[in-house]
Structures are given as C-alpha cells and as structure tokens.
Image 1 (cartoon, helix red, strand yellow):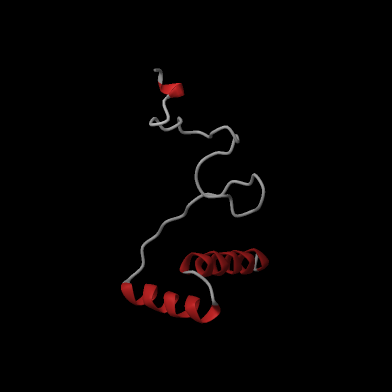
Image 2 (tube, rainbow, N blue to C red):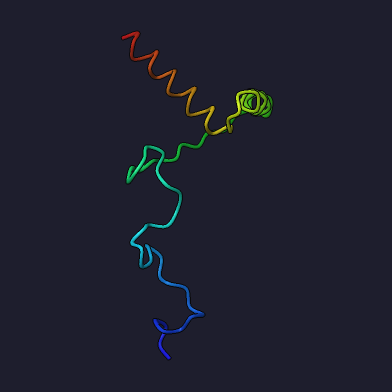
Length: 79
C-alpha cells in the first residue's frame, strides 16, 4: 500500500482537497495575509494590558493591535 492510499498517513502540509492553506485565517478578511509582530514587556505592563483587555472584552492581542493602530494613525496625522 502506498502512502497516498494509507489512511494512517497524514496528507502533506500546504492544504488538502479543499485547497485551503493550513494555519489561522488572515485578520483582514477573505484571502488576506497577516504578519506576526512579537515584542517583550515587563510583567506589570502585561498585567495592566490583561486587565484593560478583560474590561473591554478583548484579548491582549486585540488590545495591542487596537493600540498600535491608534498610535500609528495619530503619528501619521501629526506629520
């Protein structure tokens, strides 16, 4: 029996019969890609971010995206 007909062998990465790519969907909608930005903060900043995110019904990632977007819009307007 070859791997293609063996139900115990996972299909190759890169999409299955549906043609979808593996991984999370993009943030912008259908077919949009998103990139990951990672940075470190001190524990107190993380704790405060979590508290604000919880209060606003967001995840820390959503809060971070919102804050960065607002900062960049403000910086662009100041030019």
